[in-house]
Length: 218
Image (cartoon, rainbow, N blue to C red):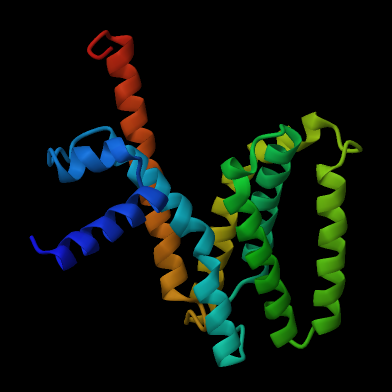
């Protein structure tokens, strides 16, 4: 291997170690070619955390590019925004490090912008600005000591149902109108891919926990 190849490999390794995996996982994959190691779960979780928060970006870009929000369900976006907002508020109230929930903060900002764009292209710009102001007030109140932790916890427990309901309303809206309009296929795919990643990582963790409890692994 010449110097240029070594330089490229060194840059690739630095990139992978910085964003995707610890050095032990790099050694398992690229030195020992062990692709069944538990490091697979680590890499999947990292990729999921990178993909899911960026899912609204293609949707925002498509709405701006087309100048239309046809096909986007306001109720669906609102429920998704509420689900992510309660998750972020819960993590903040529990004083979790921002590295554990920063992607939620990034995602809720994007979805808030998307809601504003949907209302704007529906000719309801004033309502969109008012909604954004009310939402900021809601988030401030939800994250403040004025809101009991039990309330935040209860809202957080409803996250999954809120997301499912949001997807249902979006699907119903598209079926009702007979088209998907400006709904971004890339955003839907990223959400789908992120969901598969979370399922895979959860199953892997569950499997290893059972093996640990059964004494199969130390």
